[in-house]
Amino acid sequence: MHCNILTKTSFLRRIPTTTCSELHFCRHSSSSSLLSHSIYKPPGSEAGPPLLITHGLLGSKFNWNSIAKATAKATNRKIVTFDARNHGDSPSHDDISYELMAEDIWELAKHLEVDKFSLMGHSMGGRTVMTFALNHPDRIEKLVVVDVSPLDLYSDFPTMKVYLQALYDIGLNLKDTFDTTFGS
Image 1 (cartoon, rainbow, N blue to C red):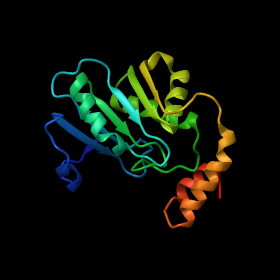
Image 2: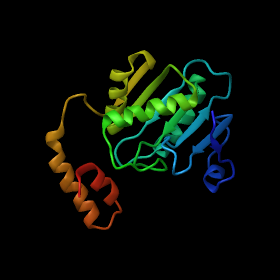
Image 3: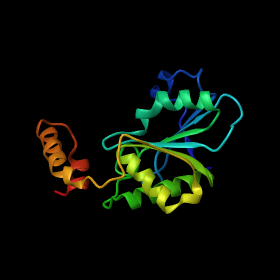
Image 4: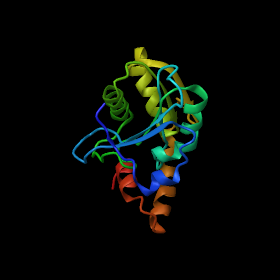
């Protein structure tokens, strides 16, 4: 695994180090297409395949900090949280789809040198991990889908567009997400 490990940032100094024996934040150059990710190592020896966790729309890997630390400690598994494309510290792309985001997970797994792992995704991340599981069923140990249905709910997008436009209109910097999700 070839990650640039950040160990002396002000953010890291705010995270208690008693839960995990090691915490790695891996960021790659903007020219890299690899997803930005954080690795939470268990205090003891690893007791199974890692758990990769992804967030929902407008979220980031940091949404999962406390859960990742507690899960690493409770399960003795390595936990990896990651930013989806066009989110957080991950690269921005003109193209976005569940298929592409699922393939981003596969590229991350190859980078982490894991063949089989568990996946957990919330909302948009839940749809992404379901897509990954359909495309790579042999790579999944367990799948956890949080707060989203596998049913097609695109009829709700017009309402979502109105809400996102209202947030944008009051000055929240959501333009890139809005444009990427719904077009200009």
